[in-house]
Length: 226
Length: 218
Image 1 (cartoon, rainbow over the protein chains, first blue to last red):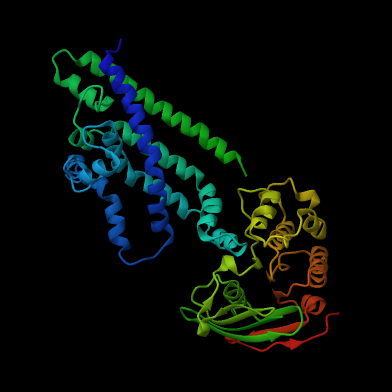
Image 2 (image 1 turned 90 degrees about the vertical axis):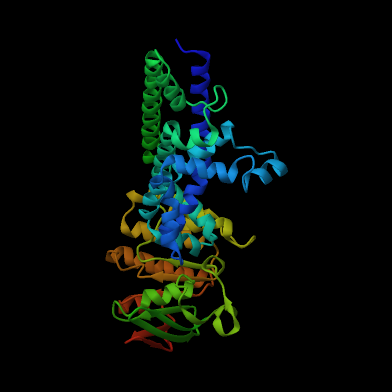
C-alpha cells in the first residue's frame, strides 16, 4: 500500500517529531519558568523572542537556521569540525527545525500550568531545606505535570506537521529528510499522486488522534495521583 | 535563644522589629495586618527585601552589615505556615519525609519519633486533601520537625482549630518546647494560648515591635 519512500517518510516523521518534542521540553520548561516566576530587565524582549518562531514565516525560520547552522554557517561549521554534529540536509536538522517551531507552543502550555501552581508551596519547600532548583523540580514541576504533558503533545503535533522551516533547512531528500509533510507535498506535485497523498494524509490523522488519545490517558493517570 | 533586629518594607507597609527572647518560646502578638506573618517570613529568609540581623542560639543567619544573609534553604528554620501549605501531590508520609534529606546527618529525627509525638500514625496513609484543618497543621508541624530545625516558627497554627484540638496542639507545642530544646516563635492573638506556652511575649504595635517581655508559662 505504501511505497518504500512513504514508509521511510512515516518512520522519519515519527523519529523527528519524538526527538524534537523530547528535546524541546527542557528548554521550554526553563523559558516558561523564567517567564512565569521571574522578573528581570528585558523580559518583554525575551517573551517576544520566544514567540518569534510562531509569528515569523516558517520559511524565514528555516532560512535563518540554514544561515546559522548550515555547513558553512556561523555555528554549523565549528559544530561539525569539533563534534561532528551536522544539521544541514540531515534528519537531525529536521528535528531541530521542528523543535524550534514547536518551542513557543510548548512554552505557552508549560507557562500556563506553572502560573497555576501556588509559588508559596515552593517557598515552603525552601524553608524545609530544599535548594531552589530542587524545590522547583520536586514541587512545582509535578504539580504542573498536566501542563508539561500538554506541552509535549502540542510540540509533537507541531513537529509532525512542520513543513516550511524543515524543507528550507534540510530540503526534501527521500530517505534522509523527507517527512510525511514533505512527502505529501511531493505527491501533490506529481501527476497522479493524489492517491498516495491521501494515504499519507490518513496516516497524519491517525498519528494526531493517537497522540491526543495517549495524552488523555496519561493525563488521567497523572490526575488520579495525589 | 532568638534575637532579631529587622526592617521590613513592602510598598506602603513598614515594620521595624527588634527583640531578644531569653526563654525558648516567644509569642508574637498584635492585631491582624500588623505584620506578624511578614516578620516570620523575614526570619525564615523568605523575604528578600528584609534587612537587619537574625541570630538563633548563637548562629548568625543574617547580618546585612557584616554581609551575611543565608538563603531560606540554608537557615534550617522549620516554618509552619498559617495555611499549612502541604504539598498536594505527596501524601501525608511524603510530606513528612520531604525535608528529612536536608537535615544534618546524625540530627534527623526518626519518622516514628515525630509521628508519635504529634499523634500522626492514623494519618500516615492519607492524602492531604482528605485532612481536616487541625490535621493539616499537625502534619505541617511534623514536616517541619523532620528537618531538625534550629528554630520553629508557628504562624497562627491554632487559629482554625476547635477548642479541643487547640488544647491538643498547645500541649504538643509545650512538648516541643521542652522535649526538643529548640526555640519556638509563634504568632497568636489569643491570650490563653500565649499564657499556656510562651516564655517571652512581644507585641507589634503600629509598625513596631520593641523588645520582648519574659513571662511565666502556666
